[in-house]
Image (spheres, rainbow, N blue to C red):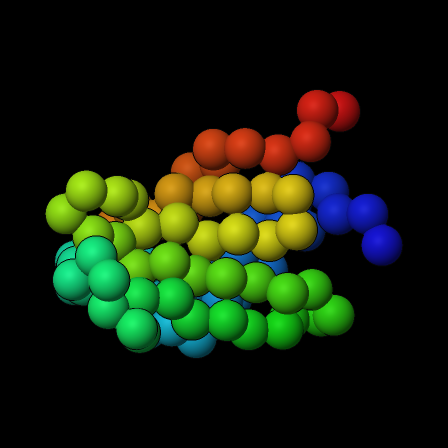
Length: 83
């Protein structure tokens, strides 16, 4: 199933909420090699990965071909298919 930008954003937002919310994911950096630095979910049939922020890398969420940066204010699209 092909995702639109809006669908991918909604799924990414749901995954971030399940991970504790944007502020929690963004403001609690983990050690770079921590075994719990990622959380994986399946939402509406799509595999989603939330990567907790680190001192050297931003917090991101991946939904299919989309990648969003997690900021305290919300999500910002970094990559996605060209339309």
